Image 1 (cartoon, rainbow, N blue to C red):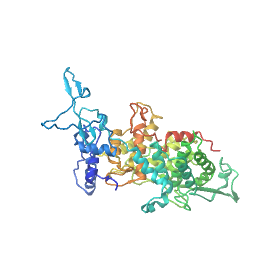
Image 2 (cartoon, rainbow, N blue to C red):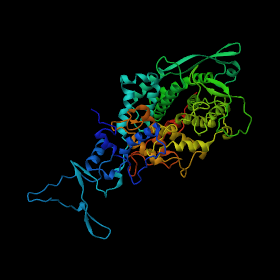
Image 3 (cartoon, rainbow, N blue to C red):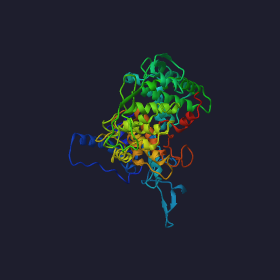
Image 4 (cartoon, rainbow, N blue to C red):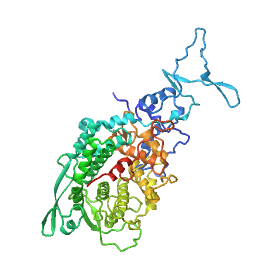
Length: 548
């Protein structure tokens, strides 16, 4: 039977006592002037997180031993030795060795005693604080995530039947950050599985547009002033319709496989590149067919434009006859950027207008104009704007009219003062996935305004508190990460907790020491790109790939 992993179980309560690595500063509980159902839910969430925030140095030896057993604490630096026993005459016969004798600051001699539990020696209060640092359960997380790739999922996953590319991406990206990518045979199987999700269809585009297009010129059957060309995308499962979200997940997964095998010329890497190379034109045509002109609506936060705007804006649908929102613009631009098809037709100023119009009076972004600000939509909107700005069309910053001060303020206020993690909306509860959706949005914004960033800059949220929430409250001792302690682990929250952890460790910071060498931090993971959310090495491989 698996070990319990919630704060409400007795064994988990000992694990939950991981708390902060150094609890000199205990977070304060939120105070309210008016009690509501919302404040009651917040109090319950703080109650379930509270056991994780105790001072480790105050824990009894048996609980510290439990934390070492499950891997959350490093082993003691003291060498193991047999437990002393009492002689027949009474008293404790302790053999004092030179290792036990040290000299104090005044030159006197003192004896340092070591507490023992079973066969393990526990640290005394004088031992280095590194022995109280909570560890990322790398191996357990990697084992859990690999299950999504190398064996059938349980029947409970039937509700995710249309999310197959997402499960592959969540697991593969997480494993990549943990330096635990699968073996070559499994990587080949992943590429073949993604290829089976591709679907093609005929689309109709204006003849004049196709004739002059660098990717579609000369293609298709012409009927009057309309050109019929072949488009395509990746569906959620075999035989399902192409969708922007699942296409985004599929392409990112293929980019990871390609980038991971470039140096060794792995067969999986070549297969992944062949698919990306052969599908990019049809993806491009499909994206063009998803465009939708909508009336221009200035948001309450939009700054006064410096030029005259048209009466309409360009939005994108998630699929044919599907909904229109900023997710479509972001996922389309992410794929277009990676596959180098971000032409001025796709990456237009009119598309930036639509995204900017989704900023709300609070400062965050909704999915469409005049919707509630939400962490997921805010990330998609901000990332889309940055990709549009960096695209081949070269939009200038002045063309993207966003109130960045209000945006930064809204994101920073979503970090919970007690838990340390982020909530997705105002008056909502902390959730581990927003470690990336909100943390990544702030990173993208700060990097954008820094012009790439430097080592003296700082993210506008509390890095340490966010890392503590991820390491203390979001880790399941059996592997995998979760929303909060009362929730079960899953692949989605594993991915975005780890992505958020990567952002806090790398963005606008000098390179952290990683690996097994002296001074290396065992919790440091790979660096993800805060806008595209794949490792920087994979992005670099795609930028240098021959896609022609």
